[in-house]
Amino acid sequence: MAVRYSVSGKSHSLKRSVATAAAVAATCTVLAPIAMESKTIAATLASYVIGVGGRGDGPSANIPNKLNGLDGLTPAGAQYVGVNYPGTMWPIDGIQSATFRQSVTAGHTELDKQIASHEGEGITIVGYSLGAVVVNESRRNLNDKYPDGNPNIQFVTISNAYKPNGGILARFPGIWIPFMDINSTTPSAPGLFTTTDVTNEYDTIGDFPAYFNPLAIANALVAFPYTHPDQFYDNTDLTKYDDADAIPGKTQTDGDKTTYYFADGTTKTVITNANSTKSTYYVGSSIRTGCASGHRPYPIAHWIPRGP
View (cartoon, rainbow, N blue to C red):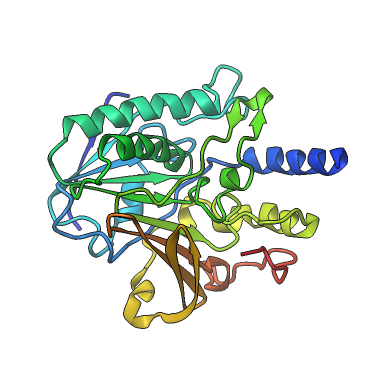
């Protein structure tokens, strides 16, 4: 896939336990990127791919690694534009670094500028981890701006902390961790734009346990280095997520129709939005697929149900 690059300007005890677990998990909330391909993204759509990288990737230079070899996300010759923002989380990245909220706000501002500068053209907006938080903020604005949707704009969110069912910030709506300037705003809704969401199974950020279970939470935290960082998602082959290869499972209704598919240990969720566009959520079982070095360890208590 040929992509040109440019970078734009640069019970109290229970409650305490839940908050503590959230704070610990949140310290890893924006570490690294993951990769995806989606047949739901039309190859003819994107003239531009606007990317927002994760923590430590302020120039958003790592996002193209998520796109390499992906069939259907961008056509040959599409231009990649990286949003430049702090991409840091105080105090982990130093006492002078931008906080979580400062990074998100700055990224949101820069992303909106890029979207405005390419308005009317085909745009695919890709956000990973901290960048996916940024993308969610901009997508909410666009939902208000385009109440009927906009076929020229599509989204890909990777390791999305605001994924409706699994994102760590969506699991703790309204939580505020003042010493780290982390706050959870409104969880990501399906909205009116075609959206593809990719998360590795057990990824602490995008597949956090639904219920307060110490072992399940420990599992999620231990799994972080095996599920979230870049190397476990670059050049991921998502052809196994195709509808033709998926086996229909169950259907539940929660405002929109949500259908789950299972293929090769992977869950695919398709949400049909109000204007008939589709939002697609993938959860891949990366831990079971092995890695270049041979074997990837199972996290502890991997058999514990994580909720719906």
